[in-house]
Length: 500
Image (cartoon, rainbow, N blue to C red; front, side, top):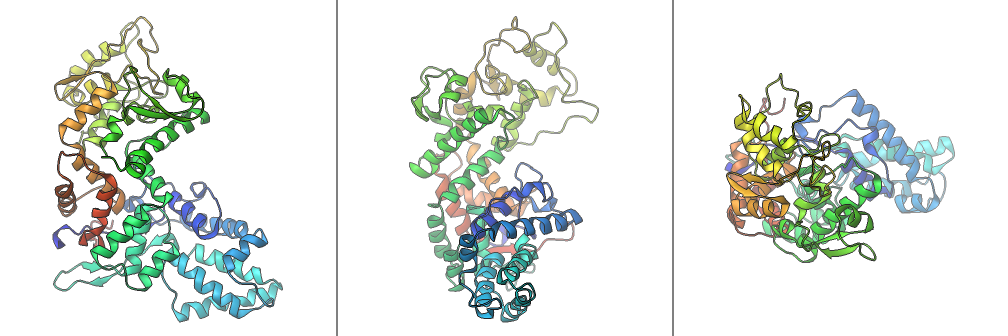
């Protein structure tokens, strides 16, 4: 078990996690991405090795804290909910202490010490000075929202005997790991109660808790976000109505397969129905339902998530599809294979065929020559098999820039021919590589680290051994098995190299 404990550093809340956290704490909606440093996608947005402390973070957290506090205290109803008591007078220290104790526990994801409570209660002087009890609440909120233990998930743990550099996490630290992994937000009161009682310690306790957490709507959103970041469709460059319809389609499929019907994860690729509205029906050329709902693909040639406009929009160029980029997406994101980067002198965004040369001919012949041919042979044939679908997922029979160029739609994966997303999906399932790749991507997402080491591979291998390398598996139980592994409750100290 110790041989599969991965390194773990201090993890800052991403902009999305920050927004979800203040929503759960205070009922306030904010766009934290406007003020916090950018979260780099690799493909996930929570890689702590890229989270460098900076003046921009300090200033952004201060501005956000002020904005959130102002919104939270904007109405008597919201401020009463947050404070949890009605002050008897302007300087009601007892009510203020109650607020500090309860809110501080939620904000810092642990119970405050008596010294901390006393120090915060001293802020009641702000109420006396301003003749306003809620002026003190405002200051306290802004302080909590800028606290390092609010902005960062700090994990210390206790040393494990005879295992230098390995630490066992406490129940509150496990609560935070569970909550941000499964919900993307702060632990609930109930989760903190379990931690207070010492009931997040054994594998059985953690598994039972995780199973209950997966019934929460926040788990649906979190699993949806995992897939969106992993497969590159988190942000779509389309008109809002079309983009929203595409996102709703894919989320509905994930909800149906993973949460509502508990089907094997592979059904995301095999699904013969899809969830569309009139906007998406017109876009796909499918019969429009009376209202948004499930319809059969019929003879359209579509099947599962790979035929969704969301997925087919990923890795596109500005106004057209890219066979190479689609091939990279399949190889690196779904098969977890490494593709060397292009030479530094190659402008990958300006590799268009010359006038009079069809795109498919250009990719099949020009890219098959020279030093780049080996890599393009891995990528282009996959993308060419999806060329009947443009950069927005609409079906076409001719190339966008030249109607005289017919699209064959013929591609191949490792020498096996296919045409369209349905046949590609079936081929990917048959390769037997998906299970290990899903587990690997889930590990990256859960641990907040893209670059993995042999010790991480040992954890992933153990997880895959439980679900099988090629058999169908259920995604929810995989997540439960993930957190129930004893290694999830441990952390390995970063080396000096890892921490830089």
